[in-house]
Length: 388
Image (cartoon, one colour):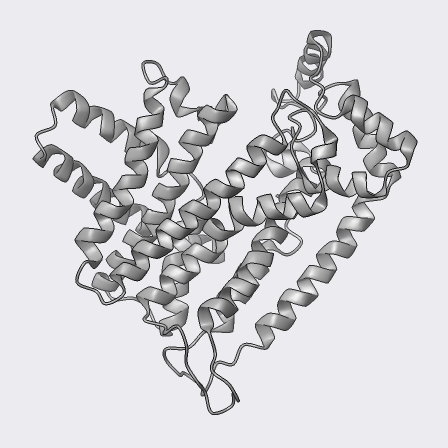
């Protein structure tokens, strides 16, 4: 039943995108853009925006319904969906430009946008257009709302924060310039918080809070001092987003393709992941030498061929064998007890987040205009001990 409900919610959200997309294209056409440019923009929107999991965008709608304590009217749903698709447009902007910067090959099971024939470096301008579309939609749908400027500032602030995180990531862990001295758990935390947590976790909830007119401060009879709900939300959602990324990093090391839907590549790609940073914090001098010599080392052509042979006869799935250097790194990870350290980390952060969530004062039963614990418990419930 739950999966059916989720499929229905996704279908409704995708249906809203069709209207939003047409609205953007109609405006583009009204500016006198030639047919060739209209076709290009349409392909950009269709290829890059609606193809992901849509969790970020749908969280705006879900959080709005939790805060209001009811289903949204059709008019409210459209507004919440515009904000949700604004998050998805922001995500698309980041991914298109990020793939170009990283020289990535595929995204969501298809070639990265810049690798599509005739696109190339025009992808950079296309990414700018995806970002600009957010502000076009906000102007059309929210210009008359009292919180319009707050929406603008929130999107701008979170975009800036994400770009800060991207910069630290790019200069800390360039793929072909391995230097583990640049790595640390503190650096990893900073990258994750700024590059992922703000836009993936805080932004959707803060947008829903603005949409539901949650004030920046309020008092309740049971609280001795004013409550700052946006700070409360941020203090929960940022560590929750960090936990999500640490989990992703760990699954890249520990999960098999059949489980996580892909081959883990963080080791060969020189990623500044939680796994390598934890290993560096505990490694002996001998283990550190192994990590220095093998982390970020690409598999040889012979090893790639072996990986293909191992995959043959198994539905074409890669089995995660990428080379001896990677295996040496993974052996060190096992020796330092990375699995046990992750389990301790996960239980600790789960307990801490639950304590913060339980401390949220919801006021009287059914009270409007206040923060609700369910927003955060639903996020945490989806993440805790996930296997993919």
